[in-house]
Image (cartoon, rainbow, N blue to C red; front, side):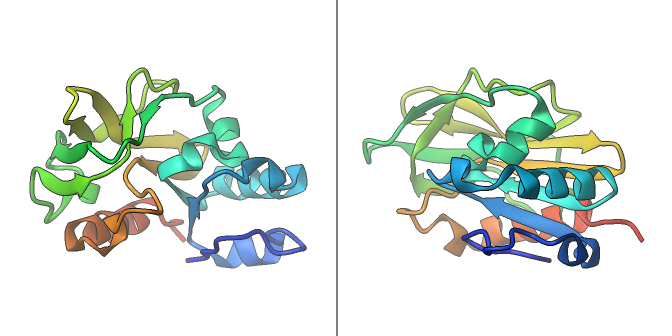
Length: 181
């Protein structure tokens, strides 16, 4: 798996993408700094079978928006008072294997509907928040030979990725999305 917080100067070269089985993409607010050439290469690799796991605010990445063909806008709030619960709604899906329901994330940024994405092939998880909002927080898509999983939790100021259940979701997602060679 190839991961990184910043785009290398030469982007993600085709040779590196060809060796990878899955790519986890997390982004915050520098989405527009990713070159269009890199987006082209990643899109081609995904369509050829590379798995893509789009994490949290990667919903606004150039790559995810291109793959979805929509704005990927959503409702948002971070006032430090929201508690997130992640409910498994497709317990037989491989990404949900061994996952407790609900996963208690604790205090977290609220992402809510409407989430401007095409209809997912499968919604594996739905999150609920203290204010009554809900969000399709675990969605599966296929683009040509590539599998894509969007997972909503993961704001950088909260210890979401330290949660063993979240780690299991991510490991399951990589296994599900990985290139089938």
